[in-house]
Image (tube, rainbow, N blue to C red; front, side, top):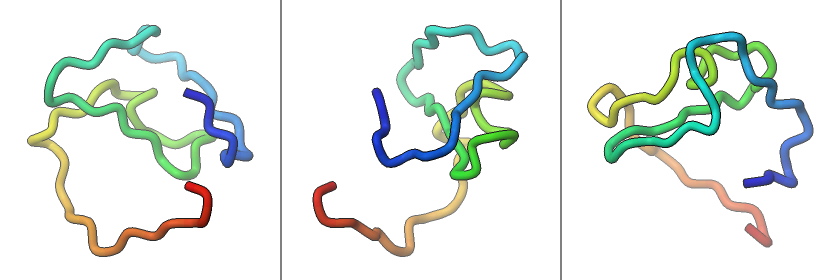
Length: 65
């Protein structure tokens, strides 16, 4: 899906991840906010739900989202 509010490039990496990527149940594709050069799912692939740590402490929304 296109993201009209992202102003940086989101490059593919030379890694073992092949596209198009299909996620299984319980898998997530994680992208960092600083997309250029970040080590995220483009680097290491899908993340299992049990590997995600943390909790949401706030939800911020802009008008029109």
